[in-house]
Length: 250
Ligand SMILES: Nc1ncnc2c1ncn2[C@@H]1O[C@H](COP(=O)(O)OP(=O)(O)O)[C@@H](O)[C@H]1O
Ligand SMILES: [Mg+2]
Image (cartoon, helix red, strand yellow):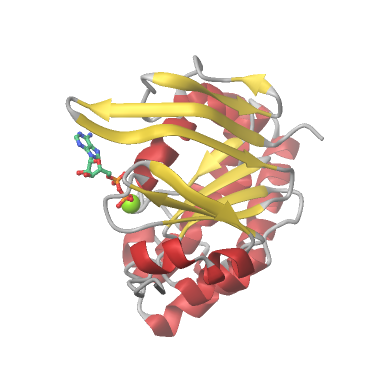
């Protein structure tokens, strides 16, 4: 099977600091893959390299078997690679539905021709509203993003990525900073994401990781220490020692 996403020996350094070292990952279509590791391990950098926000010093990124290493961030999005950020990046003065309409317009290549045909506009709006329902945001459609609680802003961010109809979705700590009373909605939404999207998630909360992921990579100091099923990771003594802070036996 052609992997949905693959990195081959991806490497990045900032001066003398080697942040990503020969990272090779493989996500099948529909994968549920978690990237875990201590603070500063290079998780966000890896997502930046995959999404094209940063360019790699070495190695390659393949999307659906095509080498996209030389493509811009926007070019990668067009090909079906979407991401959320650790800190949300929304148009705060626009309403929720306006924010969610943008990626749909972008994807359909309608852009500023939207006003030419009312029928196109209504399709786009229908799709946006359906997305908002799926993410429990329909009641907030006409609210400016800046007036929403932070947890709901993060949901809008996920809605925007879904509007791009991605084949691969990169989630960088989607529930970070969200009060626990709200975070369960985000986790429900993530659990219910379309099965055909391959998902790479960075998440600190191990309970969430073990519930969601079918495979896990542990990143330590820019290197993949180990990769495996949640059971394998949980039992791995090296992981327990390095990451979970548990002393290895013997
Ligand atoms: N643009 C940058 N310039 C210099 N150092 C950076 C830059 N971005 C990240 N780093 C460093 O790279 C390391 C990995 O950071 P990051 O990828 O954010 O880790 P994580 O997401 O796992 O916490 C850290 O030591 C961080 O300070
Ligand atoms: Mg990070």
